[in-house]
Length: 383
Ligand SMILES: [Zn+2]
Ligand SMILES: [Zn+2]
Image (tube, rainbow, N blue to C red; front, side, top):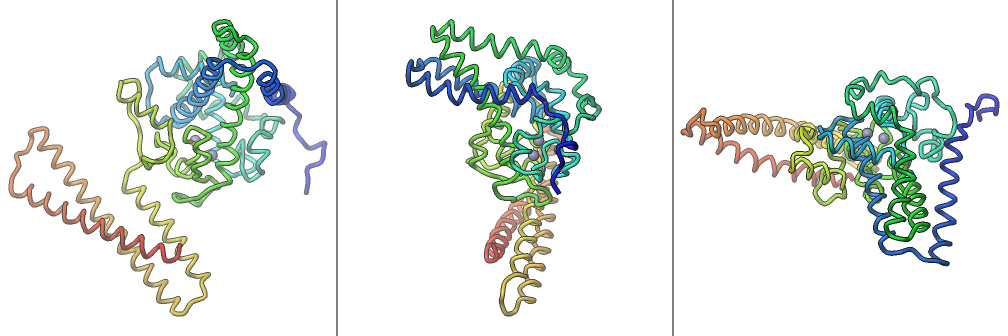
């Protein structure tokens, strides 16, 4: 049943005006200016930097730092992200993080998730901001009490509108004067930068819940997608993110594109970030194996084959065996790591017992690696 006109929440004209006017100016003004006047190279470079500043302030700041507390950051970093977030025009940190925590808690719940992907692409991308869909919770910041203790968060929340105006007018005007390409800067750094940063973030709520794979969790619509990650500073590995939201990484393989993670890691090397949280290796391995087992079982049931019962029993047994080996390996690894720590601290001298444990750990590691390979080849038969 479609909603009648009377039951639809009120339109938010300010948001509609901001999104459509900035979009039209960027879409029409930028190509016209490029054709008739031309942009200076310095303006183009500054616009790219400004876009990156907005994007990373949202992903590393609003999202991973404040919404998920995946790490801790120095006040200077927090201040820079607070400015970048206002420049990106995505509401205050407090409001954004509150919405986002509700999104994770009630993901895909059409009534509670502020940008539920189950309501379709348009709604989760931008539609949710165009009408007063959940106005009852707009000023309810109970789920971000922890952030209310951060003076930078509260300062930004209080002066949000002023900061929006100062950054969105001040930065393009200032850079325009400095480069001598005033209107070029207004168009590229003012409008195009804003429109790009908006839609890039919006893709995380829309595309990242629709297009891609689910290697870590199949309980919600969040997907892993390399192309979306390329557009969103690494946030396209959204299936991993919804499975382990407290992890400072969204991409966990070194070759996957996650510049937000690289930035946080780099900041930690120079003392600007600390306490970077990561999911335990064992928990991650268990989640992946569980999902692989589930998928393989489902495929096997659909297959038209003889000895299906036998094959099902085999993967069940192999899965249980795999989990047993996994537990054994991680238990011994823990003991071995503790032992090494004691030796390092000088609390324990190296002796025969210790050497035996090290030997046993090495052997178990070998057999665990072998077990993993066997499991993968078995699972791939039904992938
Ligand atoms: Zn999400
Ligand atoms: Zn999140």
